[in-house]
Image (cartoon, rainbow, N blue to C red):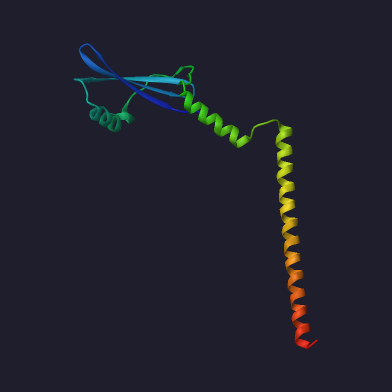
Length: 138
């Protein structure tokens, strides 16, 4: 997915303050130069962008190679940890064996649950049978 980036650089070019808008998207760059006059405050620059961005006339597009900004090493480590946690560590065969262990674990749980229920039902029926025998007076 291509990202579009808009960058505004404000600098002093004797005798005026100038702003250069750079629009980078789909591997192309186009620019527009705006003269502010006196030194603009942040709020004035923001108001100018909001009110006049659609009237800016950008230059024809030029092909550009967009280099990725260096990432914070801690952030990169965090993202790598998330990816390995999701995919799991080990070879494909180790992952397949782990999946097999989990499936057999589920099977054992269901079988033991069924056995517990069957034993519980057997005890209940035995208890009912004893109650009936007592009721008959034997």
